[in-house]
Amino acid sequence: MAQKGVRLAKRIDEAINRIRDAFITQCQDGQQSKQLPNGHCACGQFLGELNKTQRGLHGTAAAIRVLGSATDGPAINLVPGLVSYVEECCLIENAQTLGSSDKRQQDTLNTIKLSEVLLSLKHLQPIVQKESLLKALADKLKARMKPDLGWSYFVDPVASSDRLPTAFATAALYQFGYTEESRKSAEGLYRHLKETYLSADRLRQISMADLTIDVFSLYILTFEAPIGAHDDDLRNVFHVMWKGRWSLIETGSEQNIEYWYERGKSCYVRVPWDLYIIALAAHYDLRNAFCSSALQRRLLVILDQVLDGGFRYSHSGKLVSSRTNAILFEVLFHVRREIEGKSLRTGLKERFDALLASAWTRASLVLLAVGFIVWVLYSWFKSDQAVTAVGPDLIGAIIFGLLGWAWKKPI
Image (cartoon, rainbow, N blue to C red; front, side):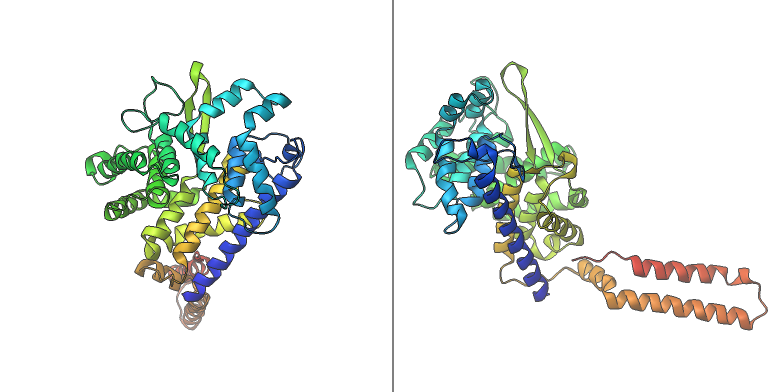
């Protein structure tokens, strides 16, 4: 079991390095950077698309999230240019007349995008950090907090608060020292999770969209804005989430959340809830949920994709999303930390599954089935019975052998 943990840690390290390299290549060689003034670089919506000129806050924040903590290599030379682009984004794009000025204005009012930029900047090395930029963005976000201690998707005095932008803003403010404001909003997220998942009456009313937002909220309260005093309740919330929807972990789908800008303009944000579940399982239930066959198979698929061209959700298109891979990068770091030095012992059911799926057990089952088939045929040959008399035994032995051979093997 200890070797299993070492193998998994090694594969995670390989995936982390591969994601970092993909961002370095895109930011360094992509046309979206080459068109910028000297000293600036940016990232767009996709990785591995060097001929595309599209760029923006989401992609650049993702790049900073991945490259910001670098202490050597090519990444350290790219980070100052990425930060400069964030700082001067509107001026640069207005000068180059790329895209719509209305779209750029919309981006500056978007709570989620502003929060993701702030969350990415927390990864910067001290030598790169720009305190004036951090304070300006954090103050802007703080000013958007509504009386109910939440945030709407955009700056709008009329719009009501929503849990998703509230979770993003809570994490961003917590990271930059606004502990009082973020603690109050975090308490609101905690109360919602407790009332929803630790109450049998309300649990039946949860839609998939609500579940994915709540998974993200739990992730924020666990890793980005920990409030400390409610660890047991949060652990119980995770267990309820896991028991209710664990089978969906292998579907390989992310949730698309639609929201609206002024004049009814539709906007979308994708929530890769299965990535967050993987990190939460490693934190709250390493032995059972994280080591379950379903989660381990999903994690194996994700790592294989990263090492074979880039992780993507097949239902979301063929291109590799920079934002999704930055989230995966962060999740893998959390998982790596959680499994460090720990034996990945599994629960009784998973041990039983692993025993049945081992090569020795499968081979033994097949040999047993073959031996039984030979015995049935020999008994029939030595007797005066018709072949139909041994038919059920023969068919049963064949099915038994096939089942033994085809049993799914976990990681």
